[in-house]
Image (cartoon, protein in one colour):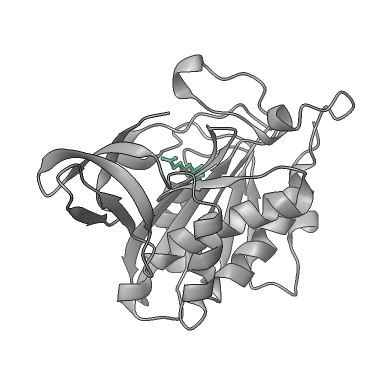
Amino acid sequence: MIPLDVSALQDDALPWHITVLDEVSSTSDWLKQNAADLPVGTVVFTESQTAGRGRRDNRWIAPRGRDLMFSLLLKPAAPLESWPRITTLAALAICKAIEAELPLQPRIKWPNDVYLSDRKVSGLLAETVSTRDGMLIILGIGLNVNARDFPPEIHATSLLRELASPVVSELDRNTLAHRLLSSLHTEFARIEDDFPAAIAEVRERSWLSGRQIRCRAEGRELHGRVLDLNEEGHLMLALPDGGSLTLTSAEEIRDVRM
Ligand code: BTN
């Protein structure tokens, strides 16, 4: 296995300060504990997490040394009300990095996942922390790169599996991670004026559009057909009674009809 190598990841043309840990409970928890002493732009990668976390109290489990697990400490240069856009931009950045490196067509499963062939390949976890210097975002990213086996019930895949190449047995995580860091920097710069154009690119990659979903919103269970994303990146649904509904990322999708 090719280990993660800080010298391959650090790039002085990018605003990131890279740390690589051999093992940690969770890169996001590590950043949370150390945020007060670290500069904005710190990115921590790890080879292994013992308590990786996903959204809604899910665990994030990945084999040692095969995938990418990292968290970024961010202070977006935009008003607080625009900060939720960071997740949308990060999902777009992940898609573009994969597209640039590999002959694959990733899709964004709104709001926090990236899919390949109808299976999850990457997940995002955005959290805020309050420090002496004000509010910051900790953005955790898990990307399945070289993992080969997944329990069927979790419906996941990896870049290597999707590549299905008879000659490639391992993808270089350093190359991918460097591309991701560059892509994240580029997309985050679109948080204000260029956000409408970014949303247009997200729409082109929307995995949910046209699908029937079941969700929890307005305190009840609803189902409907996904129409589109609005200009803020929220999900617009057509309801069976002819009405419509817009979901923010605070709402929960329960089920997608495949
Ligand atoms: C999800 O799909 O629910 C989000 C998964 C986020 C996983 C990443 S792995 C790196 C960082 N550390 C964590 O504990 N979680 C995030």
